Length: 182
Image (cartoon, rainbow, N blue to C red; front, side, top):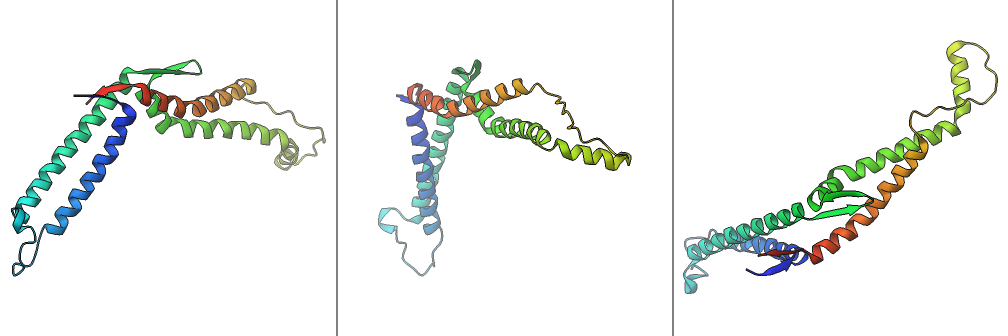
């Protein structure tokens, strides 16, 4: 067993995947042949032996891939990271980035946009109100009431942007400095 960084382990997973694809392609090329043709691998034990060896190689590589990924996950669960006063394990941050970050950012931006558009289009509420009531409405601007503290929303948007902006760099640094046993 050797100690490697998560970055090195991730690079190995890419190499393993390429090797698996290569072995699968080789198997497909030698899986069947016209019985009248000479076995092109006869001098190294034949196509049957070659296919069996390649299939075993693929199983070994797949096991190695699962082992590496499991050890990376274990390290990610055991390593915590704090960004903008928010602490989670690396595994949790990865899940947050994949499952939450984009949707949350879009939602916060939408809330801010709704408030902004409502303030800019307050005059249209006057006409809308007049159409509903069939009454003349004075032309005074309408005050817009928000159901959310706008200052807190702005702080939340900034905090989200800070987390998203900082997260990838911090994760890369952790991957480069966290060791696992392979």
